[in-house]
Amino acid sequence: MFSLLLACASIPVALAAPAKTSNITSTQDSFDYVIVGGGLAGLTLPMVAGKTLGGSGSINGASWTKEPKTRYDLLPLLTGDMSWGWDGLNQYMLGAEHFHTPSNYLKSKGANHDGDKHGYSGPVQVSFAQGMFGSIQQPALNASQQIWGLGHVDDAVSGIVNGVTTISNMIRWSNTCTDAEPECVLSADGIHYQAFRNSERLFVKATREVLLATGSMQSPQLLELSGVGDPAILNKANVPVQKSLKGVGKNLQEQTKNTITYIPKSEDLEGSGPSSAIAIPNTLASLASYAADLEAQGLIVNATATHEILKYQVANLFNQSEAAAEIFFTLASKTDSAPATVGADLWNLPSYFNHPLDLRLQTLATKQAAQVYSTAPLADMVERRVFPASELESYEAWEAFVKDTFISAWHPITTLSMMKAEMGGVVDNRLKVYGLANVRAVDASVLPVQLSAHLSSSLYGVAEKAAVMIEEDQN
Image (cartoon, rainbow, N blue to C red; front, side):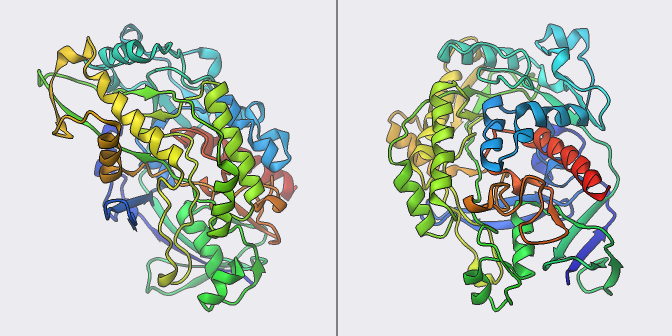
């Protein structure tokens, strides 16, 4: 029997503008996790997960982009289902989108789009924000193009995204939010729910299935609390094992980001557009031994499967000219870790920069982003750099800066990986938890690889596809 705890509240969403996302850090709007950096300058890092209606997608800055086609086309290799590739999943992303074409004014400022690459009847309102096109955005793009010779991408949802571009934003309307904390074991008979932690528990019978959608940090933890997971972890926490599924909570992938700050010559600069982008190739060497080390540490289940994923990611960086970083955070992280699990003493430190390629990409991206501000026309608009205050020259100095100041990008995925069971997967190609009759996961935890920067469009596509599969299975 499952017992599912659902805590609900009704509060307003105070998102006035995407640029104010950094203000949405209170416990009213988000779950706050504290993560110790472990060996990285003793950092203590916040990990925020949205608890508004829409989850973390409601606090991510409302960015609406899609990833390279090649990233989506890795999913069929991991699931054995071709419908998860670009051609299949993109139709659901289009179905979720209601695109509003930019005004003539925004077009004149660089708001490019390809009308055939958008949806126009979905529930998610997408448009270009007025604030993206102030006086500094185009100089920033021009300087970036000069440094790296990148072409301009006409539309960031085309599936071809190497280059520099401006992006559209989601505009959401909502006046309620929910907190979900389910416990589930084997076959769900119903749901226990309560208004707040110590309030009376009520029960609702589940006649069909239970959907697990509490995010990459909580979804695996809730399965483990219910006795579904790695027996070694459950036994240590004195949780009776109901279903052995070693992949639960493993393979956590996250992105890191850094910030540099300049004082503008004029206080009349407007907008909230892009900072920089960089594409950097690297090597396939040592990936097999790295994957083996991850398995030995208990961070992944199947080293062979992880090795294949890593090879695919690195090969695409080199051969397909995929972007490696965007606005100072890595897009294709090679580091796997594990999130918090049952029992306070079982919290695992995240393995940020465990793979040297992650640290090198982040360092080079940050170092070269600083060059953008030294390149005309952007150089003519800034006074000086104030963070980091000192002039950093060597690669080693920039690497130390990255390690001392990085934070999480709040894009955790992969803790309930949608992969074949023999590869260490937790959910199948229809998002059902292996061995559980009526439990399906529908959140970022099911994505088996980091696709790219902003997850919203992909996750709306996953949700739309899940809705169709649920309807098919129920019929």
